[in-house]
Length: 81
Image (cartoon, rainbow, N blue to C red; front, side, top):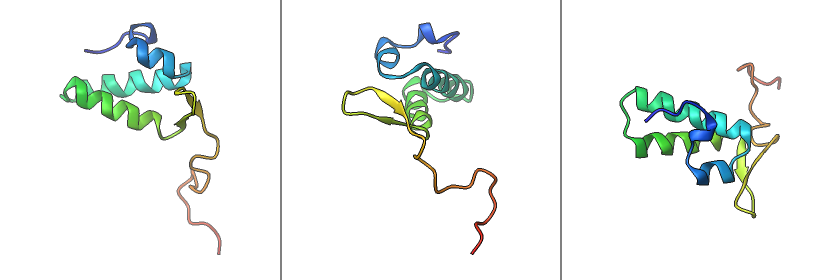
């Protein structure tokens, strides 16, 4: 079931994720279901997508993590030796 907006996301998703992460979650679910995945599998893909840039805090809510992938070069070039 595709979501038309973040207000249509499940309540637990809305309560745990900040708005930016909700948008990632929604886009991932919509893309995965349009590719034929089950809703359960699409939700798993969405949580994995959120986890790329967000981490779950001790409070159970997800927070943006600036240093999550700091070791990766966004340009895809090899680091200088």
